[in-house]
Length: 376
Image (cartoon, rainbow, N blue to C red; front, side, top):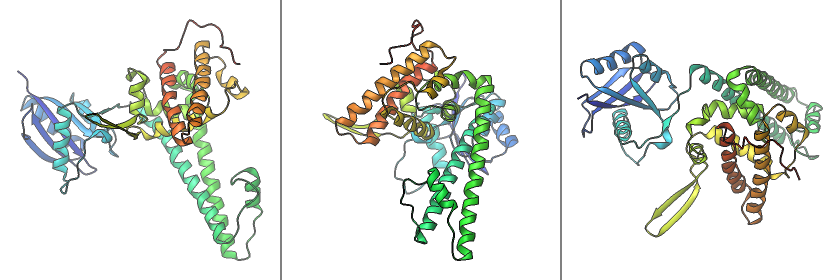
């Protein structure tokens, strides 16, 4: 009978620490550190298959090393899964080494205690990289704006005629003059930094739109998601590239758990204590959903912009999104009227929004409807 080897890999830039357990053995039969090189890795695993005759089940923790290790093993027919870091049990240990981490991974993987990360194709990973690039550029843009405001504050200059970064505020900034040449130099450099970042964001946005509307892999799914209030092209692409395949979630609760929007719980005996959301899983998807959920504080309406986005889409999808508008708006004000703070309220709305998105992306809307629901 073929023996199963459970292998935990602690993957780093230069080295990989491997712990191999034969079946349910208490201690690893092999502990070894190898160079993080394709030829060396494949040689080690081929030797494990042929010499030892193991059926290999391997895993490693998702990290900055990406999916390269997974693809190396896939090439030689070795099963390898990537583990979500948030699902790995942690204890306050005084000693932490690569060997300990590799052994812990293997044992928890063997016991089915871990959450597996979905592995995208190389094309999907590259397009995901574009949406993540936009996120980084937006962070840089925000930071530069903060630097500008802080610099002006140090010089005793404050804007008191409304909100910052409106068109009026930008005109105010353009009209500023400084007595000292050094201050003028600093301010101009900050403005150039901001303008450069804004141009980069615009270029990335154009690329995202090109992919969203021309690539058949994304065109249909983006069209469906844009029917929702608060979800336009960049948000749609962000959700699709991070989740990749919505069908891998059997129900909305699984997707809620994946993005960390379900409440945590500590229960013992008769005591039940509910905590805040778990914040496990994909934080980028969670942020996008919360941002979209804020739009449902507004009264349900079919705006001209939304109607334009919904052109050419199935009636069942449009009706489903209208149902989402009414229900989520009602939920927002029901919770808010009961004294819930806006942050908790919008989190609850984002959690319920997942259910509507899951139904659309899994074709679970009501296909028999051939009319648009009453918009009153």
